[in-house]
Length: 294
Image (tube, rainbow, N blue to C red; front, side, top):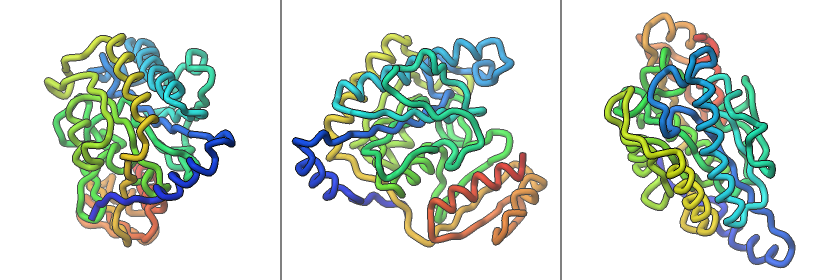
């Protein structure tokens, strides 16, 4: 069962009062993917050797910068960005807003959510996409060539869903999600209508979409980031009931057999299951399965 919880909200309110005259630090975390950036519709944009990749890096960096500017203007004191796509070396650090910090490269603990902790007040998911098998531009779940489906306690999740739950584990709400119309539908289903969103494109198919211009995307991202950090109290972290069963269905039996080398996991046809009481361990188990397959 997936649920929303008011984890740490009272403490946040009290801290806001206690530190009002003592430089209370508002920290914003950004997990940035590439497939959900405006203008990105094809695999040619996604990989280092492809001819559209350098354009994609610039478009991605600029959308992140817009969110950073909005967060700082809304009162954030610190913004940490985690590069969360593929090799996780996509963001152009020389063009990133100078006040922000960047986590780049892989492997890293917690992958797409590396660096997140209880210290943060809110998290943004920028450039995200819908889950494997669903409609949406370049939809997949963590590894398009490997993963067929991911479930937590029987509920199907994609990257936006699983990463939101890991943020909730730390008591951090997701305040802003950006991407195409399909991932925004997913986000609102899990996180509720309170979450702010920016729809930068409308999916026509897996490889086509109606996109807003980069300038319009930057404007909306800045406005929504500002709105998010100035109205944190409406946001509630999301959680999952413990113990947690992770169920990963792979695209072929051989992949599942490799993933099942994970200790304490169970293999059933193309599905590998693993149960633990701690969501952080469950998230790490998924990372380990994917490493074993690759």
